[in-house]
Length: 283
View 1 (tube, rainbow, N blue to C red):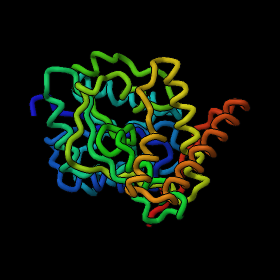
View 2: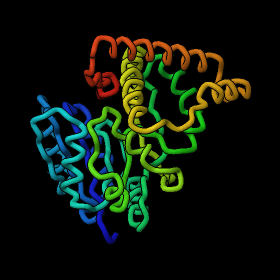
View 3: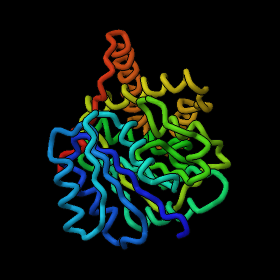
């Protein structure tokens, strides 16, 4: 690989999942496959120690940076700076990205033209409540989720793409902002999968979706959103019996509740991150 990619893992209080993230990523990796940088940002737990311990145990030269300020965007910028203009893969600490999928993503970053890359998303809702499982059955059936790129914890940029976008702005939805900078013709989705763990409770899911709603509103002010046919698509899927009426009901209820909570947060000026801790419980 001519320009070796750097995998950047921003991590704020992720002691419960950072070792799992690194173990899955590095299970079949060699030190010359890619570089790995964990950027802890304002962590008050054992994130840094556990990342270093995992690197030692796995015998992989992981760089661990410890920033004082709790800012995911600042952590991503720090990781990109460390890559010194080379291609980067930004990986959330609670995501499982297997070595084979990471290598497949890295391979497409060698192109000369700007490339935004990711892999196929698989949501693990096996430990989640009925409402959460039903919601994700509907959500993952949506065409924009099942057949295109979704900002859900993994995105990669080659050198040309990084040069095009410049510094990331201070936004809540980092992967959503990056996605909007590139037309479909410059997006590549490799065939490998990565795993995102769903919230275990419906209240945690609603809180997470509310953050995404407000993050997307923030992005709408910077760049118009792509067309959204979500409800029409869901109705079509329900009529075709791809999803059940229960799936559709769960999706609608969670969506409405999320928008109500998002509006309440805007009204009260609540800009807290509201990270979902239920999906980060081991076992």
